[in-house]
Image 1 (cartoon, helix red, strand yellow):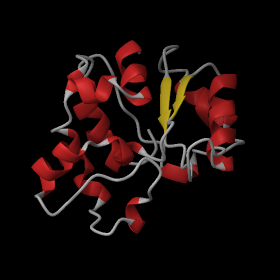
Image 2 (cartoon, rainbow, N blue to C red):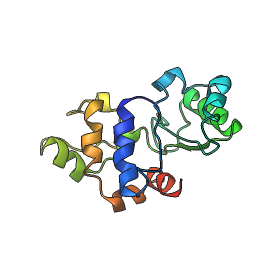
Image 3 (cartoon, rainbow, N blue to C red):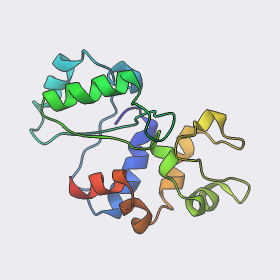
Image 4 (cartoon, rainbow, N blue to C red):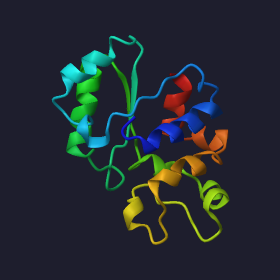
Length: 155
């Protein structure tokens, strides 16, 4: 995981696929580690387990666009050290929240993000620290219809 706000989000999503008790989530400090050139630091994590996965926001600006350079480099380093990696198809984890979950958690005046929309640019955005509340209302079928859900289900 990238930052600390995503830990509770992924806990909620892992609960949907029955893996919250078998998976430990470690934040990687956002862009501090989610960049290229961090091979030594990532190798340290391999001392904990050989079975390490990384779920990383792609920060894509649009469909078919390239990954943000730092994210692409990080994904390459993760693969090199033997991690199973999911670089999200959509911009970030909050882009995967369906409208019903956003409304259930935050109220009727809030609405879901478009797949590549930045939360900071959303007309009626929310704090990233509220993402876990939204994730609580995501349905299993919503999750499993996405690349993120398929990744979490198979780890």
